[in-house]
Length: 246
Image 1 (cartoon, rainbow, N blue to C red):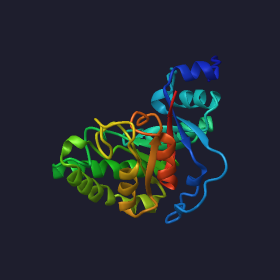
Image 2: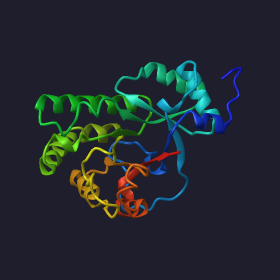
Image 3: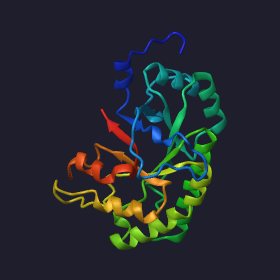
Image 4: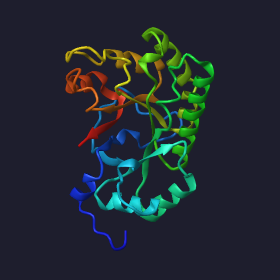
């Protein structure tokens, strides 16, 4: 950005989280998702969420500042982003969009007991997949819902049924559905102790039986409930990206 000189330290002070993107997601071809049995090797790419780019200016100027700060990509919000403007910012800055966060997933949930709400959640996810593909991204971060929407076995079943409808599109576009572990009172005991495991997350992801559904694992979100090292080892190749908080 002309007239501005951002140090990495100054830039990081404006944000709180980064995304670590593994190189296993670089293919993007239809039906060409990485096997869960493949060993991860090579570098991890450090990217930033657009909401953490606390600098003034146009979208292109924000992209340039993110790149100048040393990040290798940026994560947008979808649906809702201007695809044409985003592609122009990519071209002007040379900074790629590595993925997106699915907009409205806290309010319009796949776990909802209301069928119309679930239909809206599905439509939002499908549009997010299309928009992400249109800007060259390879993941859509998704919060599947909330434990308050019903008994665990019910919200487990209906959220999987709903999200699974988007998997064929994800495969066609080469964009992963990356479920985030959050404080949503689902797949862990929110009132429980610090000795919990990732077993439910493993079973939940595996029930999709698709290489296009994985986890964007937030290391900071569940440290209170268990050993994150143990969780990462248990989740293994189901993790397609990591979220890190500073």
